[in-house]
Image (cartoon, rainbow, N blue to C red):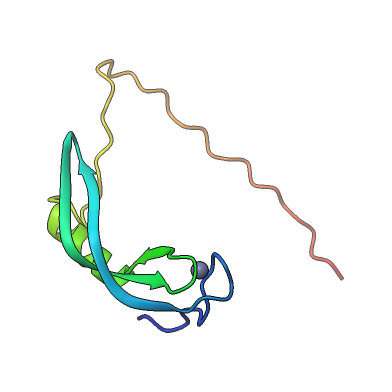
Length: 96
Ligand SMILES: [Zn+2]
């Protein structure tokens, strides 16, 4: 869903971003990944680049092997993990 994109540039408020492309850089662990011709919105006034959110999502799915999976927390080696006390909920009296 790409609806609701501002008509004007969020940076300068006067430029109108157009869909272009640029080389996208990202780091995965210690590797620099470059993606040429990656779609992005470029402001025609200030030149602010805004990566296309849909394309970015697709790329992230491709790049991250654990995409969509819940990341597991590392357990401490010491097994005795103190049990969490249930949070005391603040009870509010209904306002009338
Ligand atoms: Zn701009």
